[in-house]
Length: 95
Image (cartoon, rainbow, N blue to C red; front, side):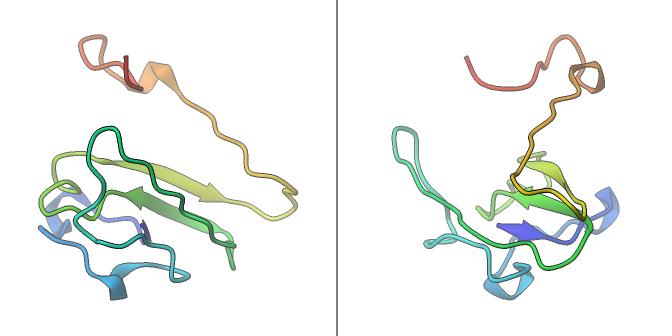
């Protein structure tokens, strides 16, 4: 789901439908399981900083989110991974 950014001290244990910005979430909110897929389509309505977060209970507070920056003037989404922001023992992505 897309949400507003949360500081570490204010991250909720569970995200709810009303926490989603632009109605961008998948059901069930408990998420998908390994080997399952889901598609999240949405149109960003205003520039700013957001989270693309897992809504499964406790996943937000354990780091299952990525920062999402929405800027004016883009025709297509662009993903940038800043590998220098990850500790060597916890690299981004999955094997």
